[in-house]
Length: 274
Image (cartoon, rainbow, N blue to C red):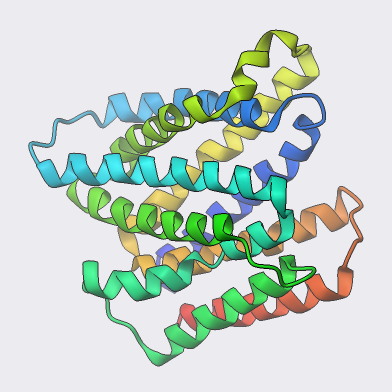
């Protein structure tokens, strides 16, 4: 088994954990404020690795790509946050088809090799995502644009990580993304209205730890694997999220459709690892 495969699966698992726990935090805190807070704490967890692996790459391409990675990630978050207020399911279904854009762009920008099985796997994964999330098959320009930004973020990350290492890169890109989204987060002004009791603080810390682990492990996987395959396989986070929500949060809505979507994502994920 290629080294990047278990790394991507592990990163997807931690990603699903922090997303599932976020539902509890959002009960008592605005979504945009929560995003800024947990990302700020995650950046603090990433800081020691940045200091430990500190270097000063004298390479304009590196600094441009790391800046683009952070900006594109921030843009994807902002677009999704706007879209979910208009159509939650349409936005999330389209925001998660970013592997299609990566499939189109990576061969041109990174010279990655594309096989028929990879193309088929990505198409099946994206079909599974749409089945999993969509209720009414509506179109969301915000979701589609967020998917494009996410794809460009992954490609920029691959370029930057190849010029340095995932530990040094992670803090820089994550912090740039955080700075980028703050002006678009009006909920930050309501921070004084939030009651930060021990339970909420503990929850934010736990979410940030899982976010930290997901970020580092995913970027290590990018260092070892082709971005077309890595960014596609990470969609198994949707499966982990479904299992967590079903088993521990008691969510049972749209069960048959989500099982079908999960099966398609599983089949597509197997194909992209071949």
